[in-house]
Length: 177
Image (tube, rainbow, N blue to C red):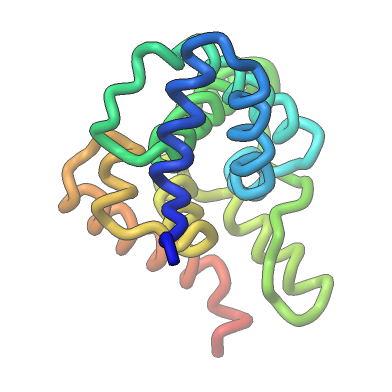
């Protein structure tokens, strides 16, 4: 029995899409859209804007099909594009509107009030801390994968993650005691 290798399949789809096969690109979109959408919501803070960021992510991926160098997985490459798009969106939003995130970030907290407090606390983290926390805790990426996505050294990932967890713990201390 031949083992199915989804990563090799992603790379094959990427190369076919780069050669003009639109069905191959749609297959990549279908395969990764749900995971990337969840990450976009956690980085952006609301579903509507996350959809826009996700669309821009796939537009960016389509434009970059021929430049993919396979130094990372297709998953990591798409995640990096999404994180860059989300960062750009957050920067432009800060210029337009002052304030914190106040829409839905998925949370595993018990009550609706606790979920809202977790969402608000995440929204008050710096973009760098929110990114690293979302990639590690929501996407379950390794430190090495996060370093590739964010294009920073592993030590930077570790320190940002430590600071993000400490900051989040402080913001949620009433729920943790």
